[in-house]
Length: 267
Image (tube, rainbow, N blue to C red; front, side, top):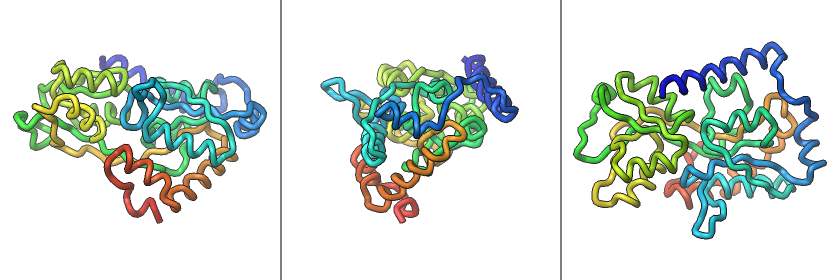
């Protein structure tokens, strides 16, 4: 498991180095905003295995706060939307190889990722928490030593938990949906993820719900873009600013997450 995580870090580090040297072997491309105009639609990558940010409804149609936010941004930019499905580990590769114009997948803004891609202004926030049943005593990070800790591979949750919870046995799943299933079935009983994932777990295990034991970090999340896509970034930032101010992004976030965005984001 850890070898795969090291591979992810190596990919990011290598991509950053090549990009800095101007030799990252990606397909030559024109300005992405011009490409979108010529194509007649915008490709936005969303993780549909990460409720409540992205998921499929009872009719197998994409829904969730990232899906609704992507629809809003696409509409305000004036383009039809095509959703491209991704998982946490392939969000950056899909962006860099041109399979998506934007990534909107609870994509936390981190210094590591900013070496390889750019981000829009934030349109949401997500906490990284450790959660477990009431019967599991966890008062500080040292209490995780020797315990199995479930998380989503390649996510900021994975990175933060791996850094802080040294001595824990990391159990990594390919997406949030698989992590949720593992927690419901008892394959793991402690998670490093978001309060939203915890709520999805508790809806399916009401007799032994998880509770937040530790808050590892609070991260803003934003749309990911390729470096140099300045025109698209400026257009997306304008749409985000307008819809934070008029309350539409906050309405979407609150409807799916059960809490409002921080007040300082709405000014």
